[in-house]
Image (cartoon, rainbow, N blue to C red):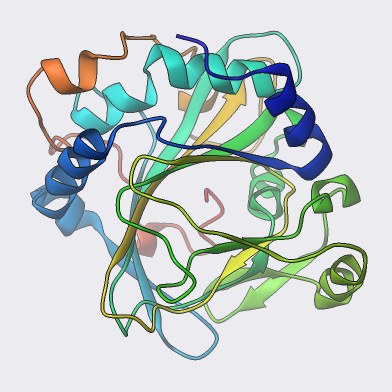
Length: 275
């Protein structure tokens, strides 16, 4: 199933992001959220990441997409076709990693301005145009609960220098401030099942969750198989995705991550370069 049109591709190249509304249905997003909140392995392997004020965002990150509900969803035909249409290059699409972002009411922290490639270039990936992130909204994302904010066209700046702010890698604010003079800040509000595709060099951030509602999302990073990193241990990022049908996540029995899943362990990776 192909959902990406030439207009979507044009907007992605121009703005660095594109939103596909209702790419997954509300019942599908609700089921995925129910799996996530009850997943023992996700709960066990989730950790807090502090922002500059000490507020915390909880996340769990893994590399290899398995046969669990998340892994099947990240390998669906419609999602992989969309990624393939947006990425530069023509080699196979590979799954770098996925993470469940858990921004709870009143305590969920902010994310500093950054580019995903601000982290990933340290892993030795050479070509940022061959990498992107895909955010699937599991709950509603609003301004009040800390939805993503982006600067359209900022991916054209190339990689901006990053330095640590709290436990996060934040972009040089001189570049961010200049970019904001030339482009309007956009709040990416999403309904459950909406999907945001964004370039690895798009500047983005989010505020803390000041609302009474949780903001949960699953963000998956993809890469072309030809974009081989020289400083990355996981081989998921250069392993072609085994594509499944769009119905596979919902017809195979809902299941969370297995105990053998290759989660990122915070204390074993000092700089958390992998996300």
